[in-house]
Length: 617
Image (cartoon, rainbow, N blue to C red):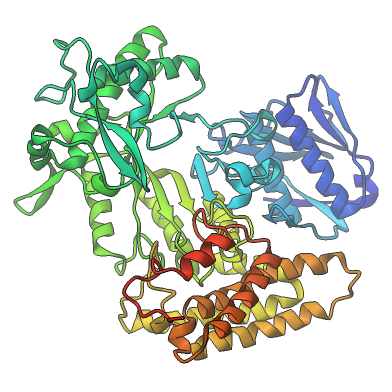
């Protein structure tokens, strides 16, 4: 690849050229290119429309590609090539053009989209362009769920800039449009495909009540309407499986752009059971019942779709909670399907949703053996996978969560495993938790281009996000990593995970917490030295406060373990200092669905770490 420099005296003559009647997506791509070229060079390039690409002094966006070379078609891939003094961005989709522009800005002009409130653009004395560059993303769908890219707290521009393709967050056409995936209520939706209002009175046997996160809801009998071979029993007029098929037909017609439909179990460990199902479960496991059900649905759905719509549809279902164990047995030392009825249809996708010890990659020999076994065995009965990973303790967003060390290994493992949709769940309901923002940036970049270095990306983020406090934050991160590495190398049972042990006092002695505060105090002092009129000062301090909340959270939640003779008044003073940094960081959620007030009430209740000694009034 040959790189050419366009000097600013020449660049000022350039135009950004779009096809006549350009779409919203192409216009957004042009606006983005114009915006960040202006920030870097101070030049305002006009955006014009033309019936044909302009052959000189132009950036042509969205015209047919005339340059032959590496295939980047489909999957939102793109090509960028230079011909004379014209540069063309080509793709099969508008989203491909958006990604071409964003990738160009990152790769060739060093623009960095760290978070929605932290975008860095270097001063550009010239603009570099490649003679030819083609790229196709490895993961068609990819997301790290953190506040600024997830649902209600998300920023559409930042979703486009991070190249996030998420099945949960609706994106307008301008910023990339919807993903080709749909499921009623997104996930945990068995019951939504057998409407209770329609069938509850006439077929109460379809349903049972279960409790999910403290709420009573209904779920369905996924064996109802299947014969012994796992096929639809057409001797029964109305059954669960038949209703699901008919309801999913409605969705196939209503969402013609959708390729994959989501049909997944309700959340939590509870499910429909009776004596008949218990007997089937002993033979097929819960996962086998799920595969048999989904196989029947997707095969019947495709018999209809092929005949009436000339298309093929896919269904995605979970390997999660009570269905995480694959429907396999060991025969003569070899892992085999229980029988052929539990082998997933070619159009059935299994999404592995596995809690793990986040300290280790999902593919590390040191990972929980159960996780490794599940992943190994599912490959025996299925060929197409999505993955749902977890990257934070949902009961404690603020304590240090050491999963920085395994990001690259995770991404490379997902690629080797053949994952086509990679979804990593971080602080999805919070925008301002520093560590998930940092890991989100690294994952966003690596899920797009796995050749990058996680260590270098971490350093990029820290320097940009914390400014004059960067050295202090780097020292803090290294100190914490070395501290926890020591426990892990000793074979400790320390676990970084949902309801993990990483925030317990036995792994966080008071001397460690105080040293963390001391390290970070230097960063706070460096920010204080900035001019009060510096517009960046407030932003750097807000970001920094999120980091300072990390050791103060440990001090607060473990206070009476550290100071058993202290008073409640002493604890309250620590709580107020902790709350000061939380508020200044703009943190609204400190654990899943818990604001500061609710979090404090929980920490100071008998429900927090039951069985541990509490300070009496």
